Length: 298
Image 1 (cartoon, one colour):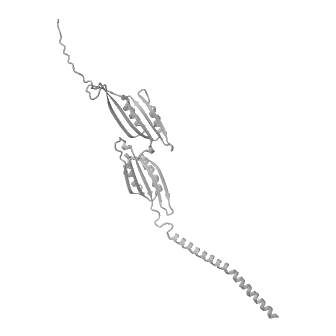
Image 2 (cartoon, helix red, strand yellow):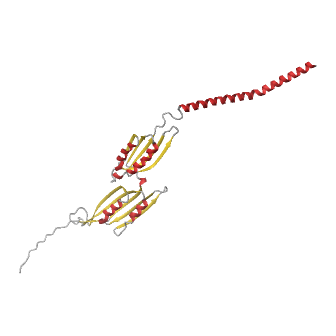
Image 3 (cartoon, rainbow, N blue to C red):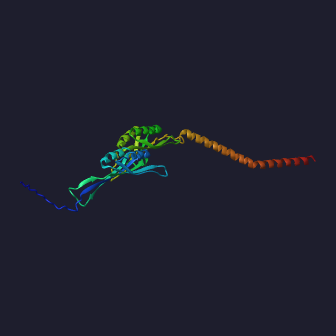
């Protein structure tokens, strides 16, 4: 009969060491979209056995502006794909993640503890593109002889760079001066190209740039909006219609005619004042002559 030797080593377990760690992840996502309601419904359609919608609200304020908020729990193995797809529904204004490691069955650190990922909690806010604050603001003036034409060309230049005209105005005064105000919005990645193209419209003047850096947030800076306020103007007539030679001649003739009419009015007033006295004197003289003649005949 043979015997085997078995060696057993016993190590006292630290009862304070955790048996496992649970990894909890929370993500905050802010989107801007041209159609909030459509994106809201598209995100809700992601619901499945692995994606649970825990909260969904579509809000409309007194002015008619729409915003939406959603919360969902995503299976950890599906979280990256679902979050990536959600980002594609709009322009990402901000995305932040927070990870928390929770000890189970103890506290402190443990090299042998198992690690398990919990469902990922994703909170989403959707707003209209018009509500987004620009990352950069620029104002400038363009001097040109054809204001209306160049203001229309701005629309084509903005659309070529993936932007758009937010609003515009046009005005022409009696002296021939034209003035157009145009407000553009373009992605930051196309800002430099658009600014360079403005030189083709006229003389660019008084350029002022302000930038609003957003610290502590993860933003898509390349696609962040940049607003450009442009004033297109012309110098108008060198000699205005109110100060030219023909205008001076017209004013002189008008003043002369006015003086003549004033003189005629004064003559009329004098005649109206003196006429009764003249008539009375004539009647008295006539009556006196009649009396004298009648006496002579006697």
